[in-house]
Length: 379
Image (cartoon, rainbow, N blue to C red):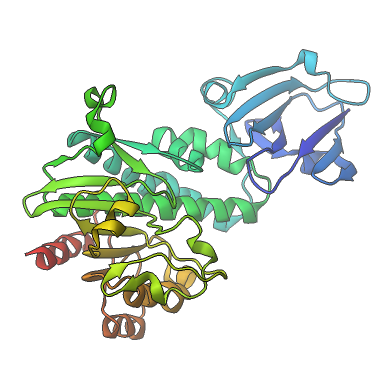
């Protein structure tokens, strides 16, 4: 029998095929023979004598998933989909896939998964719980469907992220998720260190029907809307994650013009360069970045967060972290990391106005150092 797989590089718009062997999902390429490849389509011939099921992980263009389960059999040419069932991925995870895992051979991938489903689950739970305690609800906007899945149900994330058959793609996706979870957790720790008493509604949340809902803690990569507005004993502060002063900032090569006369301005030259600090905090109440720009105010804290070992982000020191100090001119710049940073790199960063705090992780000694650094900068 034959089955078709649609590969588009990630989950969006793709459909990946696995065969259940025992309690492991094995990619069709390991049990079948590739008989056709045309663009994004891969067609495999599967032996009909395998007593098992085929699972097809489908994803819409917006990234939302479903699962189709088909019995193997002596079909004429392709799978007879009239004999298949489909479910939303969350329903499939709770039913068909409840005791099933992917076959993982790559030791690096296995190690990352162990980290992800231990320490990073703790981070996600702590961040979500913290915002809830002060009247907020963490929500994920835009292209953050995988991250949203992890915060809501890590098991669903497991199947969506690992449905990609390439170990390289899986590792890249997991590292990205780790980085985003980490900066969300750091944001919660910083808000806590500031002594946040409550969240302040954006102007449009002060009206019906939002007034009776929890305040939205708004995560959107590169979005204009602020992440949260904090009411603290030190005054009001607005926080952004993945701060992006212009939707097209990734196509600007020269960002010397981001700060002019201590005010944020929008650059006009074209090119390409990644400019999106992880956490930015400014004194005052702002619905979004445009309000901050119009106010002429500056940035109080710029915080870069590194969840991965130094070797994974070594080039960011010269390409992002140090340039951010010159480009945005924050009053306080910090690099928060889970792992150790070489002493010569810490010295270089310190000489450029960046405070490095290591071992910031659940139970890590760096958490208290982060709290002390925030308190010292604000008092």
